[in-house]
Image 1: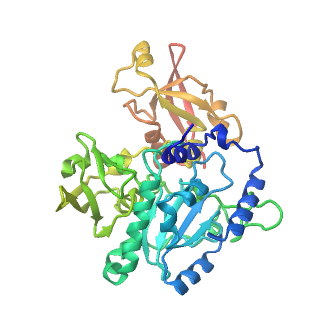
Image 2 (image 1 turned 135 degrees about the horizontal axis):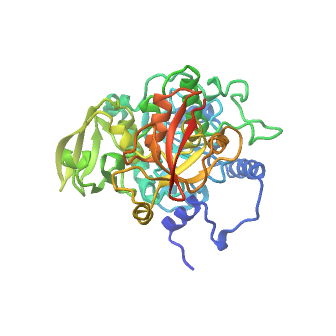
Amino acid sequence: MTVKPWLLLAIVWIGITPPAIAQEKKTREQKVREDRERVEAEGFWIYNDLERGFAEAERTDKPLLVVLRCIPCEECVKLDDDLVDRDPVVRPLLEQFVCVRIVSTNGLDLGLFQYDTDQSFAAFMLNADRTIYGRFGTRSHQSEWVGDVSLPGLAKALQGALVLHQDLSRYRETLAGKRGPAPKFTAPERYPSLEGKYTSQLARTGNVVQSCIHCHQIGDAERDWYRSQGQPIPDEVLYPYPHPKSIGLILDPEERAKVEGVTEDSIAAAAGLLPGDEILRMNGQPLLSIADVQWVLHGIDNSGGRIVADLRRDGQPKRLTIDLPADWRSADDISWRVTSWGLRRMALGGLYLEELSDERRQEAGIDDDRMALRVKHVGEYGAHAAAKQAGFRKEDVVIAYDGDDRRLREGDLLRAGVQRHRPGDRVAATVLRDGKRLELRIPIQP
């Protein structure tokens, strides 16, 4: 059987191993150590040594490609390096970069490397002087990446970075926006919830996996910091790196930022964007990928703002403005995110909710505009068992939360729980169970 490269990439990313490439089951520890041995033996990628990468880029005047890839997370979607290294289009492009492979975030400069930490694969293309050309790697589903990334898309992002690198003096001013404001903490291990548990280095002896700070732990630590300060988690932290789909913009994963579709009655539709448009810049920033679009969106406050989009339509230049209304971020879906697990502990006592099917809605007599969230899972252990201890059961249907019975998503309840309430509060919830209404209370937790 012949497997197309893009399909094989998708198969590897979603964690399904075809029989032809099946491997003997190994522990995470073995995989991480063998990965290092293989990469260092091949000698193409610099392994977990950013400073060496920057020094080599300065010496050779090549741009850097820094790939943050979570090796220990078997359950995470990840890029298959062997496939990328063999690709006849991507490989020659990689050879024009100094390639650095980072497998943990220990000691990572969070002032420079700002990205969606719910990813398990993220790439930065940058200059030796730390000028960022662009980002690559996005995700809008727990396990499927086919609509967000592709090898052709990676190749075009690399090509775009090479163009910027060759004429950096021309683009330097417009690239300034690729750097974000100073973070609260300069490295992951300096967050209070991680400090003392991790160091700036992976363990070379002992258990390397347990010494690793995973990407998603940075997002968890950021949220924990607000909770520890007694503050509501801000919208910009709850809804990080909004996906373009949240404003109705469907982009082609095989291109840099080419419009594949526009959702009817969406923000993108109101702006006048059309399928086939090639978005070249947003707020002056050159775009290399969907992740670059997310970076621009991430920088817009939830109170509203405006994006100036320069594009090419039918071969002609065109400029449009995208007006983002107040609370525009809340349209994004956060339920797929790894960090939503922690939010479920805080706001739902460990409940995992999903929309009730239309058929079951009709059977229960619930109107289309009313809340109907089925309890898909009830946590069993520790703080995630709080809802179970409060009387909630799997297959309960939540029809009101905190006095609100509008048709809301699970993410909306997560937001309400962590912004309106503090640990120790108990939020009223109405559930349907076997045709009967029950009044229960969900404990809000740290």
